[in-house]
Every structure is written in structure tokens, then in C-alpha cells.
Length: 49
Image 1 (tube, rainbow, N blue to C red):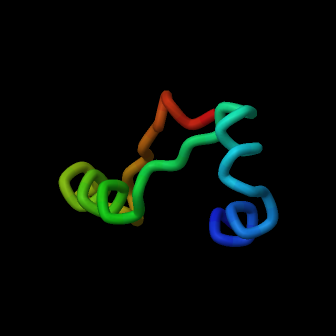
Image 2: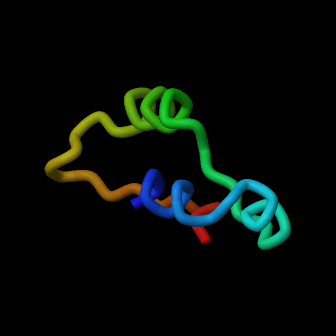
């Protein structure tokens, strides 16, 4: 959905709305370091808005 949203709304409008996304590489790194048992583990992202 992120790619679709970013292609539909220009960067200035996203900036004016305060919409920011974690880069994919960083999200993947954090998940790899945090989620050790994905089928039996829950993870909360308190920054997810």
C-alpha cells in the first residue's frame, strides 16, 4: 500500500500532512533483530500511526 500511496500523493503534500515512512531496509533490519518466532510472537510498534 505504501508504494501506491506514495505514487498517488506527491512528496510536498505528504510532507504537509506529516506522512513519513520508515525505509524498507530499516524496517527489515529491525524485524530481523526483534522477531525471533514470527508464528508465536506478537510485536507492537508504538510509533505506527
